[in-house]
Structure formats: C-alpha cells, structure tokens
Image (cartoon, rainbow, N blue to C red; front, side, top):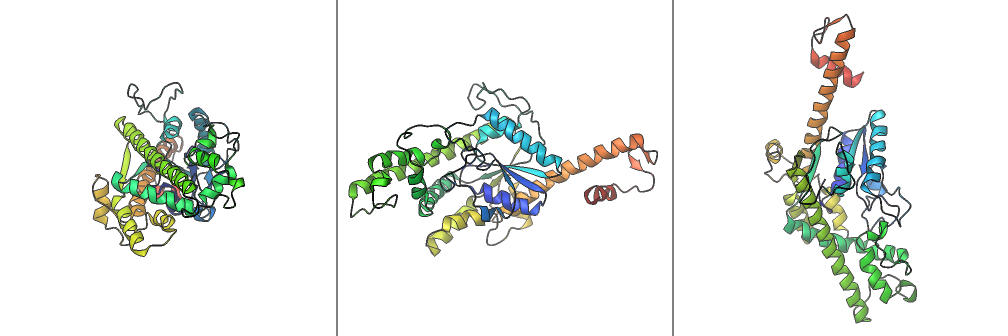
Length: 359
C-alpha cells in the first residue's frame, strides 16, 4: 500500500520473485481498465518478470465505473482461485476504497467509511500482512512532478491524443477519470490532434506560444491533481490505521532522496523508471539493525525490498505455523499414533513443519 508513485508495483514483483508461489492482484481502480497503459502507469510486461497479474487491464468497458462492491466480488473470487492452487495472493495498488471493500468482513456499499462521521471496522475476512511504503511529502511531491514529465517523455501525450474523442470530452466516467484525460481533453478541444501536423507532439514555444501555454497549463493541472490524489490516498491509509488496521510502515524517504540526487548528478531522460525500478534494491545495502529500526517507525533503510521481505516472511511464517498447528491438532484426534498433539515416534515440531513445507 502507499500513495501513487511510491514504487508499490515493482516492489511487489520483487517480493513475488522471492515467494515463488505468489501472484499479484491489482487494486488500482484506473489500472483495472484496458488501455492508456502509460497514463495509468501500468507496470510494463517485461518488468513483471513472469509474475502473473490479475485484474490488470481486464475491464474493457472503459465508459463505466467499477463500484467497490464489484471489485470486492471480482478480487474475492480471484483470491479464492489463487489460494485453491496453493499460492499466495499479493494485493497491490493505491485505491484504498477498493482495498477496504475487499478486506472487511462486512461491507456496506452505502456507507463511506472514510467520512469523519463513519468508523472503520477491524474485522477482516482475510489474514493480512499490510506493507505501507511511505515517503515524506516534500520529497514525494517533487518526485511526482518529475514522474509526470517522464511519462510524457514515454509517449503519454501521443497516447492521450489517440484516446481523445470530442463527443465524450468532459465525460467523467470509467477510464476517462484517469488523471491526464480531462486535463488534455481541454487542450485537445482547442488544438485537435487530427488538425495539427504535430499530432500530439509537445508544441514548440517559439512556433506557437499560445498552444505551448495551453499545453503547460494542462501539464500543471496534471501535476497538481496527481499530488492531490497522493494526499487523499495517504489520508485514507491513516484513517484505516487509526481504525485499527495493523500496518508495517516503511519510510522510503531516504531512498527517494538518494535516487533523486543520483538523477540530478547523472541527468538524462528515463531516470524516473529507473528510480522506481531500483526502489527496494538500494545502492549501499541495509544492515540488520536498520531492519529492526524500521519496524518501530524510525530509520531510513536503503534496501527497502529487504525489510519488506522480512516483514512478509514473518507474517507468512506465522500463518504457516498456525496452519501446521491446526493440522497437528486435527490429526491427533483421529490418528492413534499421535498423543496430546505430538507424534509418538517423532517429537520434533520443527520436523513436522519442514515436512508440511516439503511434502
């Protein structure tokens, strides 16, 4: 979990490669839809490293919203399917309304739990390990503006020019709510892409100053709205935490500061992708005492992936031991070779844990 731009998608892929039987479920409401891969910042196929992703670009009806109740049903079925095959589901995304709808034991679509007058339920229908990637606002807001520039360098404007439909400009529904679409709709209404020889290319200020100014206004709005979205996401995470949800918080501020400093020194385009891709690898490694410090909410580990892996491994191990305990208790009730929850021949609980994992 975390605000947009904090590296959740790539961190989840790195975690999945170290938990071989894990698969990823997308919980970003704009990434549910098929299309606008650059604008919605979907993780590219090569960067998924062969890890199977679900609910990523699977909704073709881009002119209809996906309700939280629909996501609860779709993601719940996906989790059941993943677990039935003995795999570990990883839920990844910044749409906390969807995450709440999916995970709470009792969900009422008529109640906005993020309103001040509402309360958040601690009763969840799954045993969850919450990993929250957090970045100081002063650093994150700067990075988000850089990331927008890099998305445009990667072809976002051309993608939006192809998506533009003058008959639906201003319609805020489904994929058309994605940040970038309404902002550039206003730009394309003034400068339709099919009437321009540049066709979506960033306008040259010397050749057409008014068009360049309109472009820069759209760009400012995208950056402002991206920052507003991040603030709302952080606010909802804090709301869930205040309601009793048990988050393991990772402060990635130092990681972003170091990578942004490296970007300033190295220069050149495409650094934003490298920054987010390297999040969790770091450059100097992380000491064991740094890992211990982060669980107390202090410290600034460079190797975010390492500490996230520790947190997830601890939770998986706890769940695994609980499952082994249930299995042992059930077996001892029906097997004459067991007594008081222990095997008569082998008394080492560790051996049975190993057998449970490798059998």
